[in-house]
Length: 198
Image 1 (cartoon, helix red, strand yellow):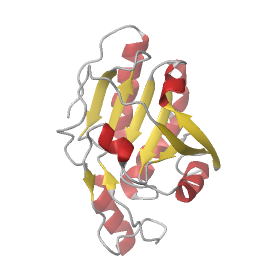
Image 2 (tube, helix red, strand yellow):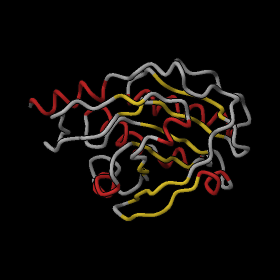
Image 3 (tube, one colour):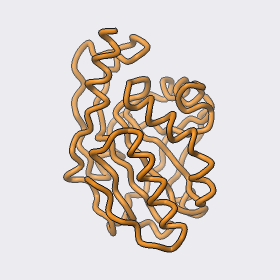
């Protein structure tokens, strides 16, 4: 129970996305080691954008309270994102071995949602996100020490031309997904997304 409470504190509280890239900015291109259904692959934002808009969502850590909820919500709504022509990729500072388990876990990513490893925080920082240091002894819902920093829980909707169409931060994990879906559907309909709450 103590471990669960600690990870809720670490991952339910969203840091304010004050410095994040703003709508209209060019999204930084990146390539990262990722996992889908426990199998590793190389994710390329540039390649994904050739297929349509991309939802790049940063989250603090796999197997933690809020992040588990967010991954599950994305996974269960993935068909709706696909119907809008969008690709979804989660990004955290977790090691790829952890993400192999997370991406395959039926309770969270469910073998549907791909997640990418940004162990040095370089990708998060390129999107102007803050990295919070982990506290010694902080454990995830599995009882394992997390041992890495936390990127702000922030989602970017990137259009095929490489522009940031919407930025979603400072809301609950579930609401983050709901707002991301709404923004993607607006982009797909050729509308300009309303600026989500920061």
